Length: 368
Picture 1 (cartoon, rainbow, N blue to C red):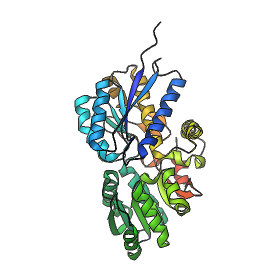
Picture 2: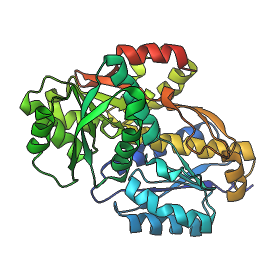
Picture 3: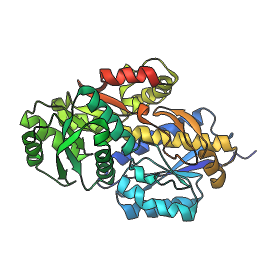
Picture 4: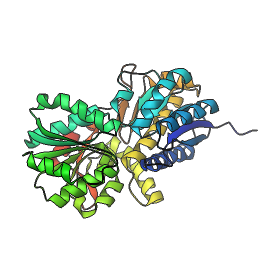
C-alpha cells in the first residue's frame, strides 16, 4: 500500500541577509514539524516543511510566497522581518493561501485580511503592557529611542505615543536611530539630559545591542525598557554582563521557570526542553514564533479535516489553540489572537529572562 502523501507547510524566512533571526525562526518550525510527525502526523499523513529564503528583502519574501503557492502548500509560515512580511500581504488576496506571519507589525492584521494571521503579540499589545508596567512603577516621564528603519518598531512607538495620556505618562524626548547607526552615544546623551525616569527603546538586532552598550557605558541610573525585539538570547550574549537589569517585553516562553504550574507552562516545556537539547540554547522569541505558526497551521488542518487551502483558512478564522505563547482565539475580526496578558515583562538577570514581580502577579491572575 503506498504511503500517504505529505501535508506540506511552507515557510518564508531569512536564511541570508541582515535578518539573522530568520534562522532561529526556521529552527522553531522544524521542531514543530518533527513533533507533529513523532505524534503520527496530521490527518494520518506526514508533515513536511518546505523553506524558502527571503534574503531579508521585501521583494524576496514576495517571490518566496509565490513559489510556495505554486507548489501547493496548505499554508505558509511567514517571515519574522516585518518590512518583508508587510510586502507579502496584498499577494495573499490573489493566491488565497493562508499566511501566518511571525513578524510583529500590527498593521499586518489591522485591518483584517482574510488570509493573513500572525503569531507574536502585536506592537499595540506590547506597547500597552509596557505602559501598564511604567504606571505601576510610577515612571511618568520617559525618553524614547526607536529604530526608524524598522516597520515594527516605528509603528509600535507611533501606537504607544497615542496611548501615553491614558496612562499619565509623558515622552520628554524622542530620538530616532537607524539600522546602520554605529554611534549610539548621542541618543543616550539626549535621554540623559531630558530628565527622563526611564528609557523606552523600540529597537531590534544590531541597534538593540548598540543602544544597550551605549546606555551601560553612560552609567545612567534609570531603567532601560526594550520592546519585544530584544527578547532573544543573542541580545543577551552580545550585550554581555551589561544586559543585567534591562527590562524586556517577552513571550511567556522566555520566563518559563517563573510561571505557575498551568496548561500553558506544560505547552512551553514541550517546546523548550527539546529545543535546548537540540540547539544548546533556549529558544528565542523568533524560534518560538516559527514553532507556534507551524503548530497553528497543523491545528487548523486537523480542525478542518482537510488540507485544501480554503478549508484551512475557514478553520483558522475560528481557531482556539493553546500554544507556548498563550491561547490563541482567532475570529473573523481578530487575526492576532493574543492580548496583553500574553506579554511578560521580564528583567535580565545572570543572562536569563526573569519575571518582574509585577508581571508575576499579573500571570497568577490571568494564565490559563
